[in-house]
Length: 206
Image 1 (cartoon, rainbow, N blue to C red):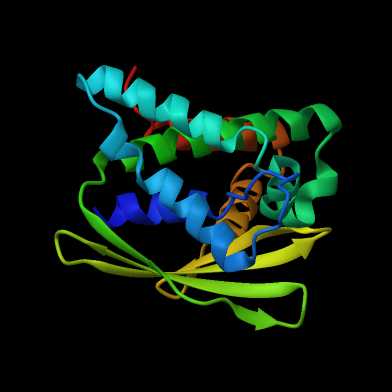
Image 2 (cartoon, helix red, strand yellow):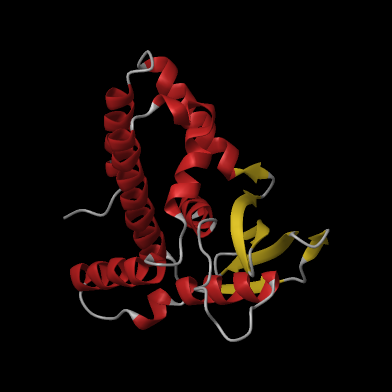
């Protein structure tokens, strides 16, 4: 359960609300709505295991489509190596990264049962930065504190990073990509393949 929630928390770091609403929500409201929508999936997806998994993955895809800035998130993961990728390689890595987010989040949501979600008030850092603490208590008595870090882009707040029980997850992913670059001697195609194979190991079974 602990690994499942950490995976879930990591991918929630990418979630934002759609632009174009009549009244722009604040950072706390944005985090609360996004988290509530995703965490509620196990309660709304009923049926056989295979149908439930498919329904959850479809739901995740629907939620993420149009509300996640995958190019920006991908650039953050690539870090200092972003200029080493060609346009086609960057597109391929973004595809693999997006696929892994959807599959891993669907797996995590499918395993999550009872929980209590408490979203605290935003901690503002000037007018364009904020942190929103979220405390999750599961039915098996585990507690996780998640710090959503947001930045104001235009009139919309976007989640840019996540810290789970003190672990900076955005930095963790960047370090993982950097380590793959070392292991594969900066062979971008090999790195992308290794990333894809690693995430596929924990993807839902077909």
